[in-house]
Length: 356
Length: 65
Image (tube, rainbow over all chains, first blue to last red; front, side, top):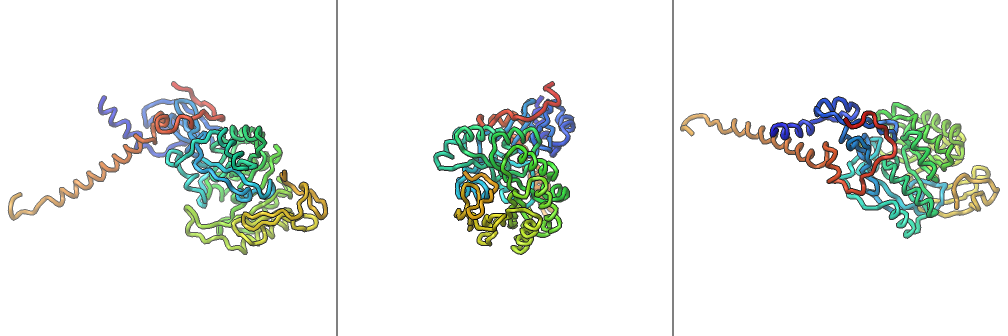
């Protein structure tokens, strides 16, 4: 009895990561358990008792899949909405931004890796149930709540409940996401979401597999579903030197966006800074970003912006018809110049977005 | 210790060092296990109660035996 009590825990402690083989874990532990399959994201982790998913925040506890982060954000900030970046939604307003630990992707360049690549119990968290988030957003005069920094998909239940309450209170909801989610949960989430910034990290399956531990196709599907469901979609593409800065690849991505999401979809090219596991690479040269933007405009994208390059002049919104300056931006300072009731003040062209 | 004989002390110390290192590794593993890592029901004691909530999207592939 004593030897079992001593040895069994050691056997468990020495267990390697076998999240893809619950049967092996059971034979190793000599203990049958209920197996659940998480159907939230395309990874569809199969979990034996006590196992966590790849996202670190969903765990099988005796046959029930539980989330460990409901109402426990690890980051809470009031940010300019341009920081998300959402350029075509309530410009100049602030977004109450929340995030919990965990992520279902593991990008080597992650700029929020201290949040996204950690366990929830290893992080200082706030006790912030959905009602409190909405109350705080109101208190700070935020017109939107952004589910951001890490990945709103993995704190799905928290995002959904908060979004429902926010909508009742007249506050908009923004998802800043990598879009790696299954169709059914996504459609449900879209019913309470107003805008989304979807990160298309690269445009090859190989890039997603080797750099992000994910797949490209579900992300593309996510963009299309969001558009079908009436969510305002903006796309961000972080250009990492030598890995996804090929202009041909960027051209194909822009072509896909024009065809499937529409030319009015704003596209942000974001500058990479050495982070996490890619510290050996230099920051993206500004010329590369400028070239990518030129490719996007040539492919027919109406609105293309550069991120993390303040003062470049490529953050302003111009009318796609007459070229008038509609919204001027320098960093997070926004000035509405000639946008009137969601249309160009000069030629009357309707501008895609949520403006009030 | 007999005089004028090679002392076994260093070798014993070396062995003791290895033993100590192994023990430390096991202790660390044990600590992680005890804390929160591998035994699911311990989440209920280490995670705040109100953050544990049943997830919306999952399938039971095999129910509890």
